[in-house]
Length: 155
Image (cartoon, rainbow, N blue to C red; front, side, top):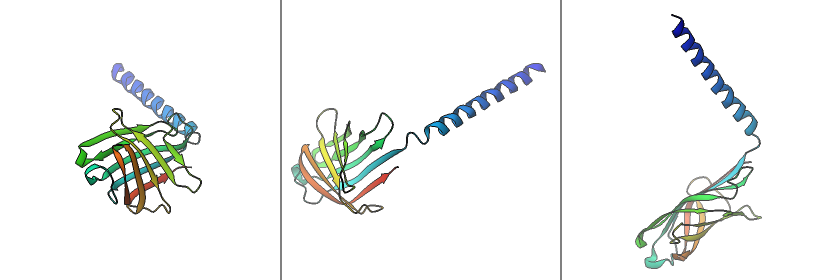
């Protein structure tokens, strides 16, 4: 009979220890690591100068202002269907916030097949109602998305 009691007590102590660690971590880090995050998502198809007139699709997430090691980093994906290119893209020191509150994201793929800059324009609206210009050196071309999602959150 004593073994089950000991097992329940040890399980209760382990659960309590886990709860205390979670509470301590969330309480001490919550204010110090707030982050401004920027997400661009859409398809740039207007006035495409990419080969074969292909649109450029994108979903890219970045940390603009942050107190953690990921500040100014971006990660996501871009595609150019007519060219058969779908790549993970990323960038360090990749997000620039301009004085007017717009952003430019600079991303590339590991294999060099994608190197692009994406810039949004004001006003930033909820939902797929934002302009984002895409300019790339690889593959070479430009295009505009008139209905991108641009989401900026943070402190």
